[in-house]
Amino acid sequence: MRAAGQLRDSKLEVRLAAIYVLRGIARDFPDFADPVFELMQAYLRAGEIEYGDEAAPVDIRAIMDLLRFRLEVPRA
Image 1 (cartoon, helix red, strand yellow):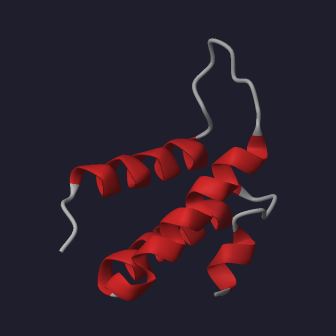
Image 2 (tube, helix red, strand yellow):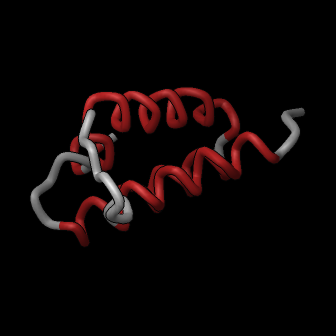
Image 3 (cartoon, rainbow, N blue to C red):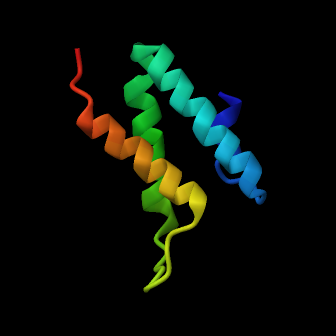
C-alpha cells in the first residue's frame, strides 16, 4: 500500500490524501479494516508530540476522527 508510506510525507496534502485513501480501503474492503486501523494507531503512537493547549494538526485530527468512527460502528 503506497498510502501507508505517504503518512510520513512532509506535505500535509499528501498525508491527508493517504489517510482518506486508507479510510476508503478500510470501508470498502472489510478484510483490510483491522490492519488499516492498527496502522493508524501505530502512526499516532509513534508521533509522541505534545500539543499543549494548541489543537492537533489537521492530519492527526483526521486520524482521530477515523478511529473514533471505527469505535462507534458495530462490527459484523
